[in-house]
Length: 407
Ligand SMILES: Cc1ncc(COP(=O)(O)O)c(C=O)c1O
Image 1 (cartoon, rainbow, N blue to C red):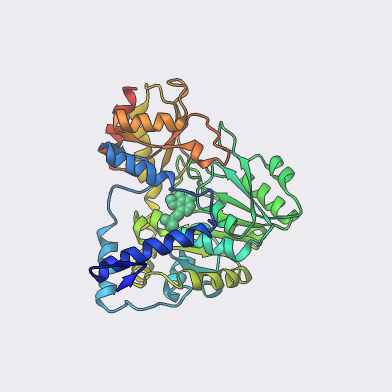
Image 2: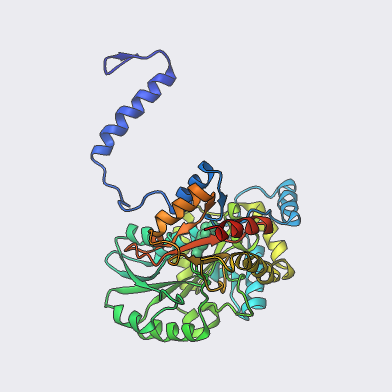
């Protein structure tokens, strides 16, 4: 068949040529909705790790497997035929099990019917929440270094991200600075505790300050709490859900990927007051509609036994300490992470390179991949920190520490 004067030998050739012509002409008239967004630093560093055969302490996922019991439960529910669409908000028994976990863990009570929504990971929860609640022209305060899922979604709403910085020293929020940044356009504050990438955990005093500011200025709080089970040294996670006034204006976001070492399953959820939940569900139904059915049934069974998550603080604290003990005496410095499975190490004693140059050199010359923290700052602020994920087998942590001792 002639097409633009060319004869094609078979259908496959035609398909290729049509797509090349069309894409080229379509792109000329197209503006990106996210012009500043490229490949994430996690993907970039993982690719470099693979290229140089490096230990990958860059990307935030465990190198050990999900509990066999949980895997067996997914298989069981699949084999028993629970494979079709569940309700959009999540299967009722799963939402009930989540409400029970919150009651056990946070001492809160939610109506699972109207206040809990299962999502395809926290990423989808963040997308559906920000899309539902933030409007064009509004401002949203985030704290740098910030996880990379917030700003692009705010930008898609044609809203503005207002970046404040955590302190370089102990990664705390300057509440007075927050008050000064609030304008009549400010609609929401996004917090993340325990915090990726710094490992900082917000205190009761932080939550009370947030409560006061959010109430006085009538703001929504979006609280990313995906590492809520992972806190160390006897620290307690503080959830926005535990502060009754704050909870009335807050959306709390969680992920079972982190809790059950199953980041690839993408099962998360949102807890929010009824009216806010109703708006989030309107978006959620057109993003994913719902989430993998057998995983919901399996996690509902599993989460009802608190011993399946209560071991996490000790388990990860031991890993953090293996890594930090191994690094002791090296020229890297860092205060122990209070939560998450990330440890920051500072290298300004060693080199005046940028954090990106240092991370690249570590990967290339020493076969150890990490994440340079300047990537989490809108203005590229570089305080010579690298992030290491310690959700790894003990011998991986020991090997990584040995490498750092040589530098
Ligand atoms: C702070 C934070 N929020 C959200 C997410 C996304 O979680 P999920 O994998 O459940 O989408 C992550 C994942 O690394 C994270 O670190």
